[in-house]
Image (tube, rainbow, N blue to C red; front, side, top):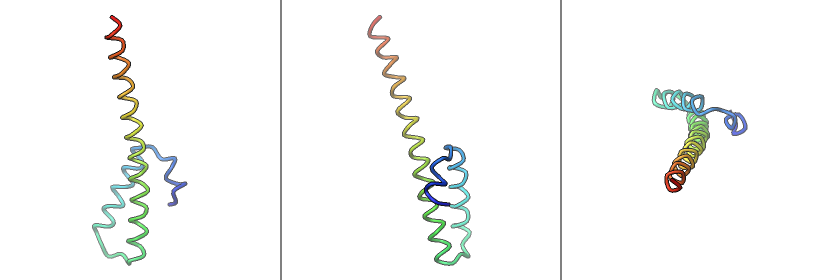
Length: 74
């Protein structure tokens, strides 16, 4: 799975795939190359999750700022 493949994932999809990657890595029994590929995939999925969470944080902050602005005008 390339960066282009992970870019379009929603938060829940990326999180669920990341959980599976972690389970596979923890189970062991993989070659070094397989482990590295999974690790890289996990890093890409974690970045997708971070982007979604940052977007949600920005939306919350904007909503709170809007409420504060409305309160100040009353």
